Each structure stands twice: as structure tokens, then as C-alpha cells.
Image (cartoon, rainbow, N blue to C red; front, side):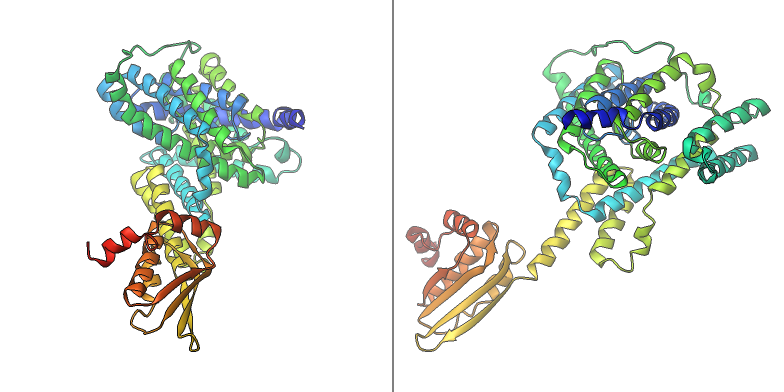
Length: 497
């Protein structure tokens, strides 16, 4: 079964994977150069990183068909380090980033994705779609009419070619767009911005390169404040992208394995003179939309990227940026969850607030980790508030024995603890109080403290108190942290100490 799965990953979709990988490689080149410029390093640093990361994640990653390379989110975190300490410290930080991510994988932190609600994922996707579109605006600002014409033509090819019988199903329209517009640009000798204008392409293959930094505690103090957020942002974006690709392909992925793969990929990038990277939602969607499904598409993207920039640089330099802008606009349109706008009227207000807050924070700060953190935090707050309202306490009076039985229903935790205490009548004169916990669950110390308060108050009023029906989990936490049956503690409380 394992062998069949591996064969399917590599050989189950050969033609489409190769074509999709080629499209992705072409789209990676200008982005890798742009991200290198953002980070303040030579373009080859981003290109080498994209090659190494794509190849390594193709071989050992947990999400076939997902594209990982140098990214803008990671590049933004490197700016200060490069400016103050230089490239060698960036390479060292990249290695440490990889080590932290590998450790995260072994500690199974990928499982934390289960705490990310669908509203947060939707907000993340929409924010990325907006950021991808906004990143294309500099290429469409203060330019000649030829650029707009080429971009419009590229979008026409991308959306209309799939409607053409036979050919539209064989050739990925983004690849046709890039090839066709490059041919037109060269034939008409249009004076528009090309990939060659982005920066100098590397002329050699990457070589093993150990960072020239002292192996000391001082070096660790310099790079750790950068490596830690790089590791977090890289894993977060990679796991979110993996979740999105899972949905697009109706398949599952191994999140913890992907954490390790991202770590080993960054270690490889750092040793080959590249900067840290992670999964790219834009390129991953290009890959999926172009028919890529297996590991072969990711491997082809990485290998073709290096082959093209080193050996086919004369041709690659001629690709008009307008063609790549058209592809990325297609990605932004395809990435955005248009249903989320329609569903604003149907979904609960809390879900809409979470989604919109995630979008606003990500777009405003360009910090994916911060946006997702805000979304997850809001989701937790709304959930806690909602669950607390399902806790209630009912009671009946047994006149024969002059005892009152309180029936507790629902979840008792920090947010419902005060409501739990206020549900009891401490002034009623009865001989015995029975608190039935059969339908309740106590989650934390706050809940146990509230129960202690209730029991001690009733005993202070002279009533005999009995707890019945607690489940095993509740009984464990009550026995461990409760003080109502501890004579010494009760004496302190009732004695006012």
C-alpha cells in the first residue's frame, strides 16, 4: 500500500505535473528576485533558496503538490538582520530556523492546526488574495498602455484557453500565456519591463557554503530573535497552505511531517547560500490549477527554476512582467473565497467578525502570523463565551428531609464560574444541600475554586453538603485542587486567615 502511494505521488500524473511545474518555475523567478531585494540580498540568494526548498520538500514533504520557496512574509522578517549584520548571519539564522522547525515537527506541533477554525482559514485566504493582488500594482502603475494591453491579453488567454476543445485541456493556460506574451514582446520589440530588469540572474549552480560566523553564544543571541519568528511564520503559512491544498484536492496531508520537511529544507537552503522560505499559497494554487498534484510537480518546479536561470537566462530575461502579473492576478482571483461575501448574511456574527478581523490585520500589517493569531484568539473568546451560556443550575426542595438538591448542567470553567456561584441561594435555611454534578463538567482551577466557594459558604451557614454524580475527569481535578474537604484549608478560610 505504501509503495502504491509513493508511485501515485511521483508517477500518477506525469504529464500534468511536468507542465504545472514548468509554469510554477516561471512564476517563481521574479518573485524570488523580488523577495531577495526586499530582504536586501543578492537575487541569487532567493533563487538558490527556492531551488533547495522546492526540491527537498518535494522529496520528504507531507503535502504532495504544494510549492515551497522563498517568500515575501519571510523576507520581511530578515531586513533588519541583513542590514545590521550581513548575509552570513542571515545564512546562520536560516539554519537555526530549520532546526527549530524540525524540532517542532518532532514535538507534533503541526497538530495545533486543529485549533484554527474555518473562519480563520477563510480570512487568511482572502487576505493573501488581496496581498497578492496588491503586490502586482507597482507593475501596473505609471506604465505605458502596452503593459495594460499585454496584461489584459494574458488574462484573456488564461481564462479563455480552457474553453477551447482538446488544446485547452492539454496545455495549462498560464504557461501558454507566458510563452505567447514573451513571443509577442520579442517580435514587436516592446519597451516594457521584463524579468531581466528585476535583477541579475546567477550564472553558476549553488555550492555548499557554511556560514562564516563565529560559533558562540553571542552569535546565537543575534540570530535567535530572528530565527524564532521566521520558524513560526514559516510553519504557520506552510500549514495553512497545506490545509487549503487539502481542500482544493480533496485529499489529506501529514502536517507534522511537513513541519520537519520545511525545517530540513531551510537547513539545506542555508547550506547552499539561500535564505529561509516556506510554502507559497499563490504558487501552490498555480500548480493545482495547472493540473499539478504529485511530488513530481514540486520537484520539476525547483529543478526547472535552477536550469532556466543558469542555462536559459537569455530567454528568461525576455519574459515580460505583464505576463507574470496576469498569472498572479488569476491566482488572486482564484484564491479569494467569493462565497465568504455571500455568506456574510447567513453565517453567525461571530464567524464574520473572526474572518474580517483576520483579513484586516493581515492586510494592514502584512504579518500573516499576527493575523492568524488574532483570528484564533477571537475564535477562542467567542467559543468560551458561547459555551458559558449553556451552563445552568436547577434545584428542587425535598420538604420531608428539609434538603435542597441542585442539578448542575453544562461546562463550568473560568468564564462560567461566577454564574455557577451566583446560581445558589446561600440564605435559604435547609439541613442538607445535595449538588448533583452528573450532567456537568469541571474544566479548570477556576471551576474548582468556584465549587469550593459554594461548598464552604453552605457549610458556614450550617448546612450539610454532599457532592454526587461527578464524572471521572471532573472528580480527578476536584480531588487534586479542591480544598472543601481539607480541614486545614477550610479552617483558614472559615477562620478568615
